[in-house]
Image 1 (cartoon, helix red, strand yellow):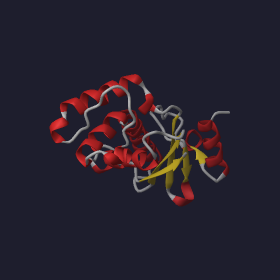
Image 2 (cartoon, helix red, strand yellow):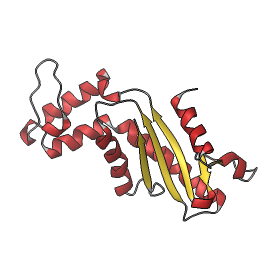
Image 3 (tube, one colour):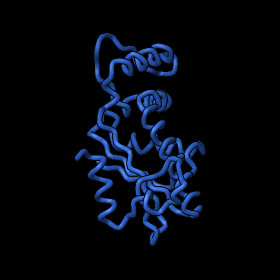
Length: 168
């Protein structure tokens, strides 16, 4: 059993019903993972198994962004080095985080569509949408991962997500 399956099992043990069991039989759309009907909460589990910040493609994109933004305070990188987000000027840190976090934001968008479809199917437009993120320890850090999801919520892209619970 992987972490994702384990957490779904934990949610069900805590009283969450599998959405398949409460949705109409004809429902064919995307769905979240668990419904806590008594508490008006729909939960969707998303798992990140790898640290995307350590992929060569990401390092190339970050290097290019740094080179294009030296005039805004981005560092000039020679060879390989470790750059901490908190050591960068805020505008550069935000750009870097968005490069590293595209995957996180895509998964937030998917969770949002699953929440929206599940809410409509169960007739609970006022149900609280909770994304449960399971992640390996990440170079981006906990606060950064939550910030990426909150960034998508704030921009209105993920209006069906009301809360994020991070498990590292």
